[in-house]
Image 1: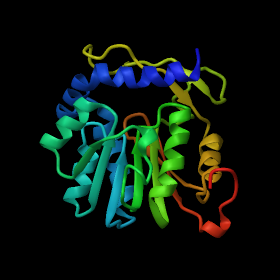
Image 2 (image 1 turned 120 degrees about the vertical axis):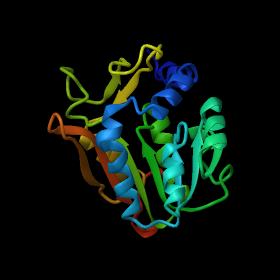
Image 3 (image 1 turned 30 degrees about the vertical axis):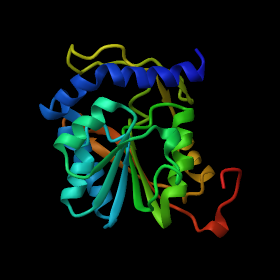
Image 4 (image 1 turned 135 degrees about the vertical axis):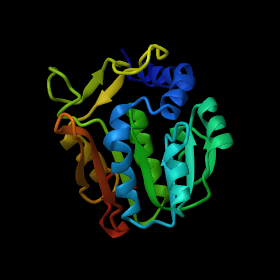
Amino acid sequence: MSNNLNESQIIACWEKNAAPWITAIKEKQIASRIQCTNQAILDTVLQLKPQNAIDIGCGEGWLTDTLQQNGINTLGIDAIPALIEYARQNRAGKFRQLTYEQLTPEHIDAKFDVAICNFSLIGQTSTEQVFKGVKQLLIPKGYFVVQTLHPAHSNGDQEYKDGWREGSWQGFSSQFSHPAPWYFRTVESWKNIFSLHGFQTPAIREAMDVHTNKPASIIFLAELKPKSLQTGGFL
């Protein structure tokens, strides 16, 4: 299956599942988020003491809202109209419907202390697009924080190498349908994509599930390199 088809299926999936997702967040149906991953991303961002932030792939807006209530001016962006509409009506913070391709200074006339992707980097080329865009929107020495599925515990019995995987709504309500494919990256691959796009080697944190004693997620925290140290084809 082509990369473009996979990427388009991700958007189609979220368009179909916006309503059950909003319900899942409102009713706290996702155990791992309640038990550890929500607090993990909050703790990571708050310790940076940013004045402003951008929440990329903000969904229904819970993280944007929480950061705003902690005194951080936060912009949430998402490509799915229903999610942005819900966020505008129910959450604090600013929200805009933008695709990852529109994550550029031409569409966003602002600079941020920190950019956050909380379980919102699912594709291959779309993830690369976000990294290109984020670098243009951060202040010098700004930070990029990414929380995602832990590569050591999300790959099943498949070979440990980058590649597309079939999606699943296992553990979610029966209201969800048409799971999207997702692009698996090894830890080393995640570290490399930060380096290729002008970031320092990321610090790594693991959000531990207290019930299984295994990481529920992995968080990468990386500072933008000084321009004099940025090399490669993404400048």
